[in-house]
Length: 388
Image (cartoon, rainbow, N blue to C red; front, side, top):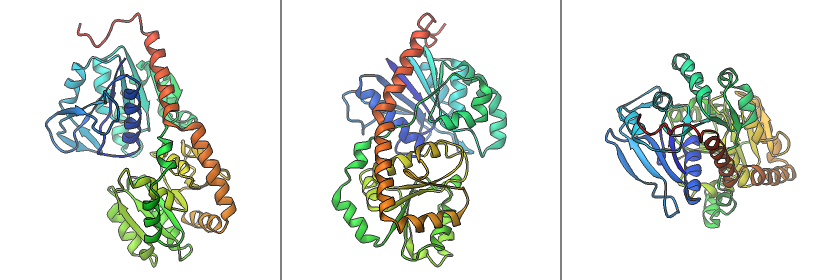
């Protein structure tokens, strides 16, 4: 089976969707699927091609990076991408939304025998773009052979999915659980020595909807010995650094920048609590919650009506608090850091829940079953990737 994933970015650009595509594509390749990934190049306007060098399989995914002309409203523009899609010969085109240029190209070209859309998030902040794109998006969703959404909560609360009449299947994201269950002990001890005392961790791109400013405020009004570790970079970094510097807790708030793949499991293992303080529905799932739970960390998240509260069970695997409420975060931090028994119970419950529901093989099994199903239903259709 030939599969083509289409999105705007791929490693070394990293965020939740990029990490999901990488895990999905690499695991599919290890199972013998012929996998290609069509994205835009983040550092130039010439198209490049090559194997995914980090994949550990005989036939790794083939990565096509279309030259990028410019980026507008976080949306890369590549005049070459539609032509590269037109030349492709996949059985399944797996779009990853939102990326309107890639979705529009597939709507017009209709490559492959089947179209599957991984619907990762509504267009939330770009209201003008969303209003212009929404009618075409609904048409594409109706015409897709299947739409994958990561949680029941998001499927039920997304106005776009509810209004589109799309054929949806819920397939939760999955991660490599073993990677987080066995961190490097030396790295863990080094981090604990570097940051003594209780450690609260945030991992993610520093974007507007992550709510890190509220977490900084919570640390500033909380216990004086708490260390806040912030891993990641992004457009809000300078603003949040200034916010931290303006507090009396500035010496306890540490911006670590991007963390390597090898160091990330140790960073989770060295922490005592994980917080995802997101403020908007752009946080559709929260893969970092899975990583923290797989690492044996209790997690604190916010109630957004998305997949975050489906992952984190309030009172079982951690706590769920209102968004944009530093006082609520500070209160939960104080209570959990003072209660070793509850933290240990939540850590064990989180690890068990991640193992039961959110492994990468569980996810890929479900996605592959969708591929087989949609190809069976389209078996009598002409191959739309063959020029007429």
